[in-house]
Length: 437
Image 1: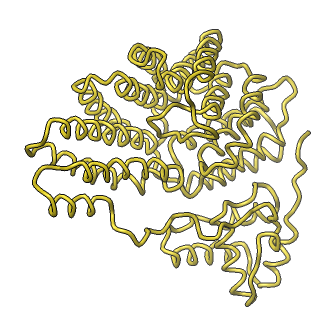
Image 2 (image 1 turned 90 degrees about the horizontal axis):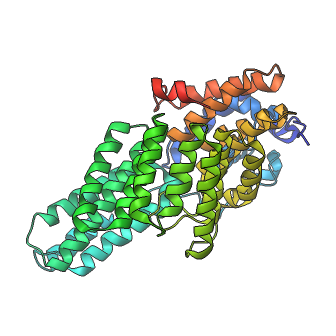
Image 3 (image 1 turned 180 degrees about the vertical axis):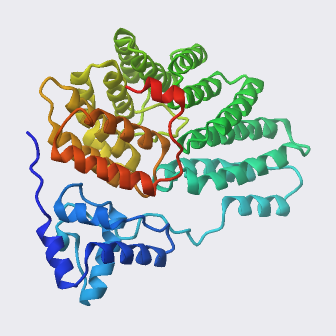
């Protein structure tokens, strides 16, 4: 049943009491967001007005926190999310980790450990780098590639320096493994930033090192990342071929779930091969039943197997491109709750965009609910956008143009305002435009 949008009377009342208009609140929120040391919020008066009118979903936690701080200062009292019409927002004890912590970089610790020891890297030094890699993977979907890529680059350069020194053979192997992972992570991050040339170069480097190590699962992971890159370049035949090559390395190992769902199925969906999508997703589901997979929503950037939830999110996208909208909704709703419980604002956005697009494609489209979900997706990702959200939001925007409804016009305005604030991504390539579903 379509959700009826209502004005946020509580927010409107608090703003009237504080004598703040939409333009003033947006500017004050930007100013306040600089005070906590995090990135500046890109809130606009248009977005504030849409919160007031109930056209878009609730703000994310940080935007809500900043709004409460601004209005609370004007009124000289503490405010809670419920006071401004968002009782479902639960503020954590501390802000989300936007601020640099008062700890040293792992890079500094490795340098000091090596200075205290000997010229050769010893195991504690490499352990610290291992911990740093895991930490970056855990933080990735909260802080994003723009913030974390410099840390990965610094670690990668340090590993390169250590490799140029005389090392114990067992340490050389660990150093090369870390080098391959860090280059692979940079390739993945570059795709999320829309920097496809860099993504391909980092992947080439990672694959060469993985080949020297004779590590089939690592080679499979790199091919999966190259497939991911080709997919967002609109080169779906190449994406499918890279995924199939990766599967030859992975066999039925841990990387096969990612290659089948994120790589092969999604590319085949864009190519209109519905049977191929169904075969790939069925095989991925079978592997997920007997391989040890993590609970909940596994990170998108991970060297471990995909979880059932991450597999389902990719299945929804693949079936959407293949035109099987019932299965899109089945997998999308299956994973929706887990996505909302996770730290991944991107997954929240992408799953909503998939569901929203499927709702438009049904025989009896639910346009109102679709544009509501699409607007929510933009709100979730506006502070840390990535290429996939940018591209899919515009694809959904294209799908709405065949409908003449007030909500569609609102979404188009919201998308335009959002895109004006998100200027890191160039327009899709010619190949990508011509292949959009």
